[in-house]
Length: 163
Image 1 (cartoon, rainbow, N blue to C red):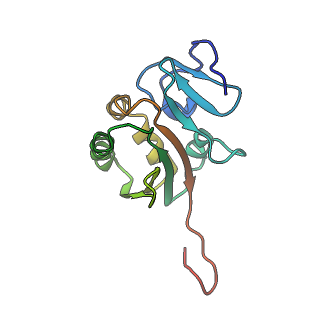
Image 2 (cartoon, one colour):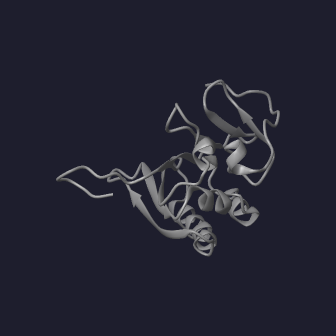
């Protein structure tokens, strides 16, 4: 993967641009990865058929929904600092209309985390992610942090689980 010259590809609005940074200095490589000028990987598509931004923008809104976000923290990063930043960002989102719950999971080998957050609708999640205060906190994450978010809905499988 090679870096593209440092040309902004989008505005600050997160859901329309898939940008998570509070800054406007994001570049895109030939794939689905967005980078800042400091080479911080911010967002990778988990589903290649539909972007995270398209999931957030689906109209009419759908819900309840689950944000499943696979997060990789770079080797050598301060794990406790990451958790503090995650807590601060969660404190902001918890106050937003449509927020229901969140749970952070860590892999047994410690190489990645999964944020499982429940919202009333995709529109509510989108509005929460657009908050400047939320973006400002995310900008303090360790260099090289990778997010792979997707929006999901529970399904029922006869004899196994209910929606």
